[in-house]
Amino acid sequence: MPGLNVEEPYFYEAIIYGERNSARMKDYHRLDISLTYRKNSKRLKLPVEWTFAVYNAYNRQNPYYYYYNSSNADYFVSPEPGVSDKPLSMYQVSFFPVLPTVSYKIYFTEDFFKKKNNDTKRFERIKKKFNNWLYYEN
Image (cartoon, rainbow, N blue to C red):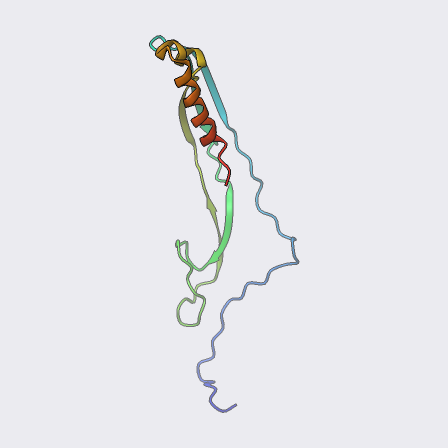
């Protein structure tokens, strides 16, 4: 064939996938633990709640997705000839190792606002604004 340089033939690795839906990822599982402590606040006289939690307690590296690359880099190395002659390998990306969290909740009641301000009308206005914000529709 005219114009074909036969002196330097090149070969590169091609990925051959199986049938549709024939492959599976590794099993995904984790252990989440939480502890909730409820009491009444001394200062505000309101119910409060402390929650301590651990996400993925035994630090399993669950797969989020797999990718093929010729190195374990964050970017894809092109398998074009001359760029990389290394064979392609499959790598796994995982998110969220052990993740501890702490949260604090205060439960405001109607009685709190009424006692604090001695103004029922003001409380109703605040409640209406809050409900409008909470249940906003376009």
